[in-house]
Image (cartoon, rainbow, N blue to C red; front, side, top):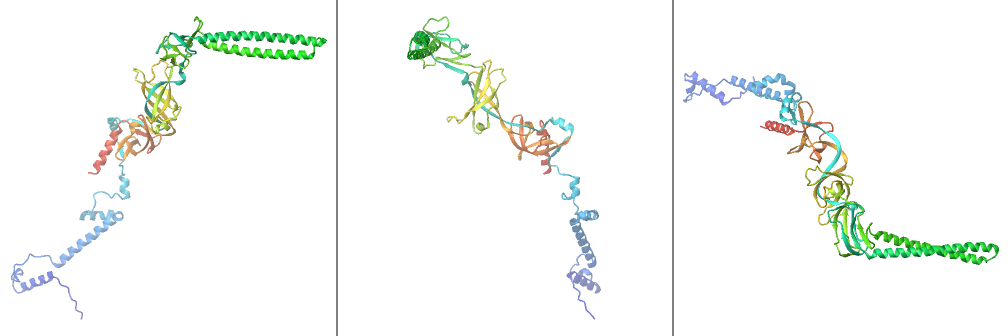
Length: 459
């Protein structure tokens, strides 16, 4: 016969002791002389309750780990024991499809758009032109400036103009009592006399040669005499040519120094060769001047140039042919348009700048030399790119963004990589494609709505 040892617990011993006390007629609570403890559930009931609790725990854990496969059947049990979650798991495919995450999207109906005052623009491809703003000064075009010197030494007899006067081409500005004019006239007269003498000598030599040729045929003279006469004619012709050159020389000199019409002999005039304005006068009445002094400076102001000071990388960015807009302190004038003619190859060591020469038409003479102006040059960078209106760009902590309209009431925030930035448009190197619609005016309201939604999601 096999004997089985039953494992006993303190609770079992207590229960047996209480039973023995009741068999001897003592109350169960006083079997050991002490007050009996409160009655407890029986051992079998306690074991049954413990088994139920363990079973529910195992079932709950199984439902937690296998909720995707057995969620429908286990969900009521998990809910009874308090293990069910109030929101679907974000990783579950079904939940993601039902509630898509749109942290960068703002939905706004037509009424809301109207309240924000939303306006829209298109992203388009255009030539990238960088605006270069710089100060400048007005200067006369060197090709339209003449510095007049006296054509001969002499004493100033009259001054017809002063700085600021407008003159015409061929107008006499001053006259000089010049002895050089008389010298030129006398030299011309002497040269003309020498020329007449040479011409007469040549004519005689030509006649002698003709007679000799006739006599040699009848044996009147020898052939040697005819040859000598030919040499004499050649010498006379050479003398005539030399005298003619002297006449031409003195005539040109006299015509250069000749007085104007109606002036007395010996008077030399200083005449303007162009239409323009007298900007400087370097002679005074009565003084003796020579040919090394500038008597007058005359400039044509109908076309001037602007010297725009370029710094740093702008020196290589600006090219000849770029358009420019010049703003001058002239009341009621919209501005002057011009084009860059050249950029100086040398840098000014004092200012570390290189001037760009901009040609500007100035028919009414509003622009004056040495005037300070503001210049904006449209430097063509030689490439095309996608651009959006400048009002579409919003700044955030993560960088510039824009809101792209992807539906009638849907606006998607896009992070942007910017290039050239102007006051009217901005180049977008990444983030937006050509043809997309962006919010311009009122886009700050979209940014505020999205920021409020994001802050609310973190509460």
